[in-house]
Length: 167
Image (tube, rainbow, N blue to C red; front, side, top):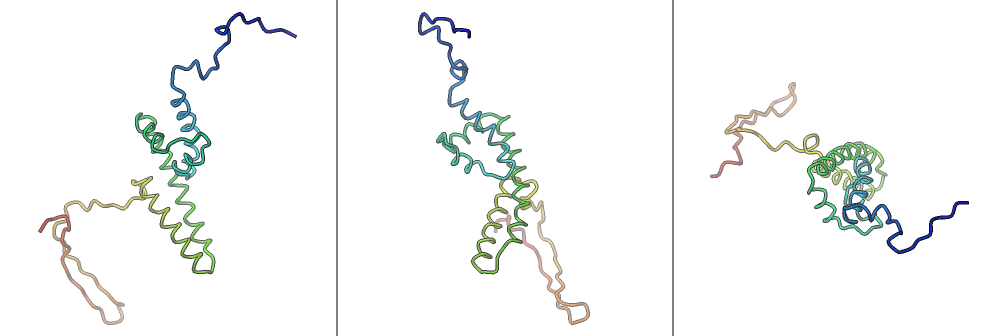
């Protein structure tokens, strides 16, 4: 068995790799957390939940601030959120189909679906957001026909007023 060389002073003790790294311990902690969290976020877990569940007692605001300080990290964060939105969208059908017979189950499932739909709009606006830009509509004439073709029809005519114009 080979014996280790004798140490003559404290400076002979090699430093752990994480202490030799010029970056701060906080920076390394955030990087490790972020790297492991990206896949979980892509699976639909929100960052706030991952921070809460992490045993290192991280601050959500600090982690988010750290992410947004670097364009590359920010882009990776938004990509993971967009992928996570896809996972949440898939979950919506499962929740809606799984509602039980009781009103409490139905109301709880509706709340879960509505919350996830809101998250989809936030996490991936391009795909799931409501289109709010109506362009330059001005005044548009609209005709709405109410009723069955074989029965009596009622026609309502009106003018759409652009709500953005100040009166």
